[in-house]
Length: 112
Image 1 (cartoon, rainbow, N blue to C red):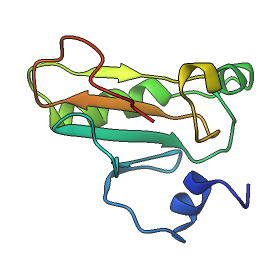
Image 2: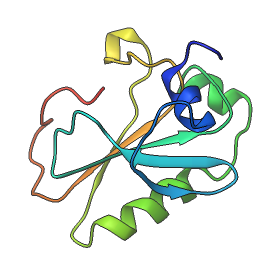
Image 3: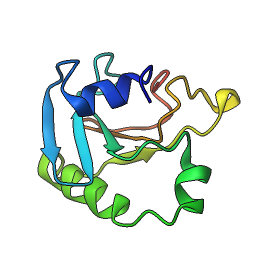
Image 4: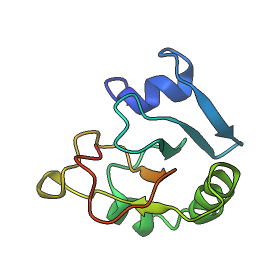
């Protein structure tokens, strides 16, 4: 989608600190981190949310998340999907947040 910020990052129109990329996914550092390690993992195919993504039978998203998380965290990590505006989703391109780098007790702020 032409107005989607994540599609623009995927296309290279907006610079990002890429930490993982393969033919289907890209992962980059969040520009407003809520933990010492805060990475966003995005499929390169645009689906608006997790429900749409699942309905289209997209494969290997969890593999990309796991590979990225293992690279940056040895003591554990949290994965968050926000689906819909009531859950805090503001970028309507399915994505996952990886939080790590400290002991995570509760939700450490807004993760969108």
